[in-house]
Image 1 (tube, rainbow, N blue to C red):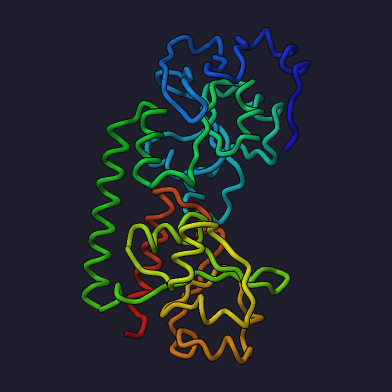
Image 2: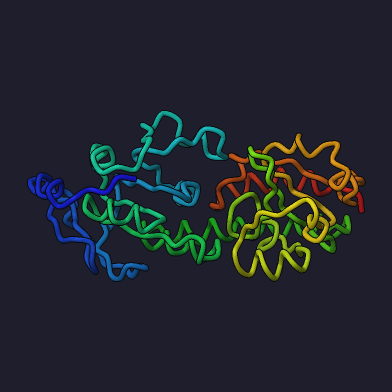
Length: 299
């Protein structure tokens, strides 16, 4: 992503009150009614009722709170694709294009994005990998002044999870271990934890499935993803395997075919794009898909 220098910011002064990117954030002249919230970047002034929101990830959380952004990244194939259909799509998160949507609040998920956005409008950094789903949705509820909507979304989600766990328990599924694998385009194999999409947060944090010990201790508890060789894949393989993306190249491999989950047909292919997001909206859609597949697994 391209960063914008001070010269560009000076050119924008007729449109914005430039306060900088420290403990306060610049505020558009058209949104004088603001309040102060605590964020990872300190205290930030945000609109009391944001009207023109840009969000760079966790789009489904914002949609679940009743906010539709003024523009979207490419959401093709996501759970919320239809929800943002018709919105303008930004290709690269660059100052000039984002400014063209006249945002009054920007929600970003990286320092690089923050450094760009905070010069354009009030900006909140969302440390999504550090927050549970409930904490993230409540934080966004505070940011967007949609606290009641956040509590309802969490309540409904938790009820959906409890219903799923009851169904899985009746089928003796929750006592099984689960692993999440993905084969890259170059043939390399990756194993994933609970905070890197691909259904991990749903499988481990919400449904409560266990992972093989090495995955629990070294992937989930630490680095979240790891490139592994076929020689050690048995150590990372659970009773059930979630398979992200295309794994056609693994078919016919003697080691792969010898894995108990593969031999028993206990593998669940998932679409990479559909399972990329960890927001509450996407997670509900992912849950419906995984629950149906898991209930048809062998005991």
